[in-house]
Image 1 (cartoon, rainbow, N blue to C red):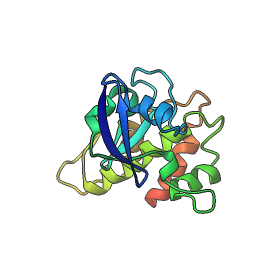
Image 2 (image 1 turned 90 degrees about the vertical axis):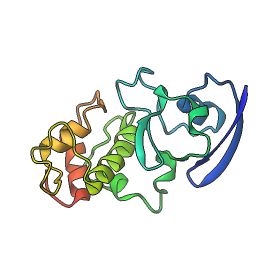
Image 3 (image 1 turned 180 degrees about the horizontal axis):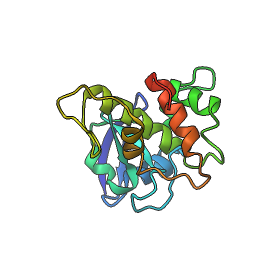
Length: 169
């Protein structure tokens, strides 16, 4: 057991955890933030995506103790029912949620994608490293490829992200 402290959705939490506890389990089981989903538990589906210090990560693949002092944002920290985050509102408008299980991870991943593009971080499909980075369909699909939707709402999800990015899919 060890003591870990991190800021989750703007609130500092101190927990006494088994050193083997994943960040996902710390969020769900210890802080009762169940918006972040446990899908495959192998980092392959993206349902557990959260934002840590501004970068998206699969919370099932990292230990909570590795994030001592970090700022963590889960789906619960992005917006409220009365004040949705722009991506949450776009997902609703474009029906990008279907059954809803993957939606929290999709939205958190999309927040990370938009931040990466804004920062000019290239992906595997970035055609020109010397040109300003644009969120093309290829860029969007490559960057979101780690998030699986069993309902097949990919086109609606792409439309929602594209709307927030300021272009049409």
